[in-house]
Length: 73
Image (cartoon, rainbow, N blue to C red; front, side, top):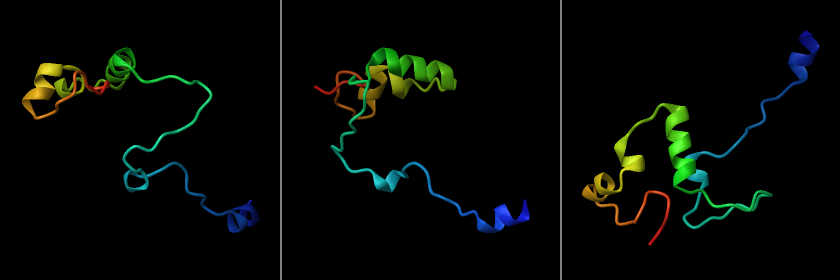
């Protein structure tokens, strides 16, 4: 077992914030767009009830100019 630990190496997984570019798209097999339902489900599962994520009027009061948090004009 010690030999396995000595030979192993850490492989970085996933991306960090600075790895993303504005407008970058990701191709995947689902071919779907995230919508309000996905946003509500994630918010509920993560127990993250921050109004900025799902309340359009609240988001607008902070300067967000989109119709909804997940859909562009």
